[in-house]
Length: 107
Image 1 (spheres, rainbow, N blue to C red):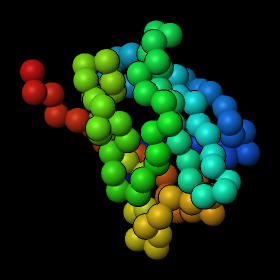
Image 2 (image 1 turned 45 degrees about the vertical axis):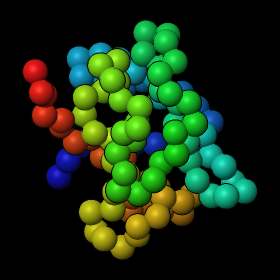
Image 3 (image 1 turned 90 degrees about the vertical axis):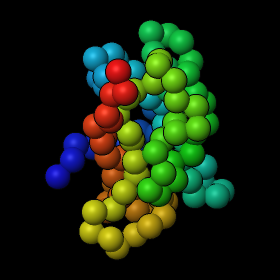
Image 4 (image 1 turned 180 degrees about the vertical axis):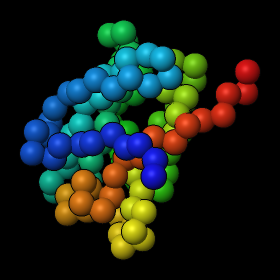
């Protein structure tokens, strides 16, 4: 089974660091209780790379804005059990986790 980034819902909004692609990234997690979704801000070396990126089931996080500064791994909210297909407060960290999928380097 693939590695995943654990999101601690009880701490939201909060920041934490993750080592990916031989670099340390700072993630900031937010929750929109009115519409029941999560967003992620991403920083690297103090530089803001993305803000308010929504966690969408099965879609690679930061896919729309990736360049050499972003993690080369894909970060995909997914439920390996197949029970849920929507990232909500009740599913994130229960059956849906933010999986880290090793990317292929194009060189």
